[in-house]
Image 1 (cartoon, rainbow, N blue to C red):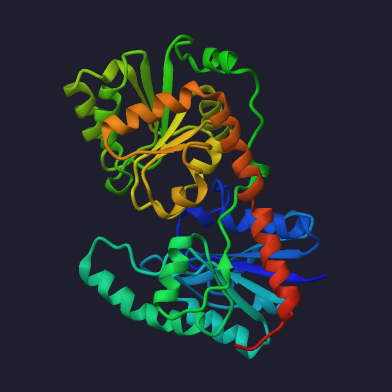
Image 2: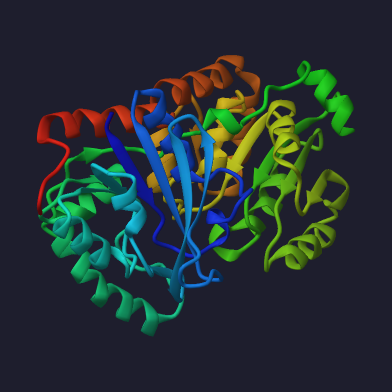
Length: 376
């Protein structure tokens, strides 16, 4: 049985026990369903140097929490011994521009462990220009590794970027949705609205995400203003622009048409996807968009700005719409809500192309062709 490891090379909340929608775990489940063993490694900067812990999530899926040093958001593992203990054949690396990529690559090279990557970003997205320049300079080490190992892109935009940087791209391998963590909707749309205390006669758009500048949540205000008064909004999220968004809603006398909810259990978020008419995404730099996938999986059609993730996921006019100005958003939102086929197409699009099983199948086909062990 082939054993594949999926190490996270960033320190963040997404790797903590109990965190929602851990991409590495979703992919691990998909590998296990296809007959492999999967080992996920998360860095633990707070652990004592020798305090490696593990848990068996389900058959053939094991998670390790490994002591690590932290530099910014990058993780430097104090040991890669779990890779040897588990007799790992290959590592699936979503390292992007992480500073720990070269160290992992050298370990794999020295121990005949096959190394390949699935990348969602190359350039630094730091708002600090000095930090961005330093990170882009250091990323050259990663690029040298990606040039000599199989490297997949999460989106066509990243694939094009890799080619510009003279990194051969093995293909597009999108991020997937982990359906194991998504509960079934308990009830019909009208029943969910009653449960959530939403007006059964109104139309609703839903925004789910950080209320920070890169997500552009303030764009909701002119969009809601451009829609008929029968339209309301639900905003689920919090961030640096929470107060500014609420002030803008009051200024434009829209506070009674928008419900702002800082945080909710996952099951309740899913209920809102099923109860609302349209999902909106205003981020024009969206690398992928997991909330977009979740909404579409629930049959909630999206209206989004053009960005690498939405451009790959949405079939314009079929499984969603693109818009830019408030007037365009208002028109597209009403079109999507009026066409039940759009929601069905959105759901079908995710089921057919954006589950982790698709990524796992692509990776296993490559490993079958190239062999489980290879020095770069």
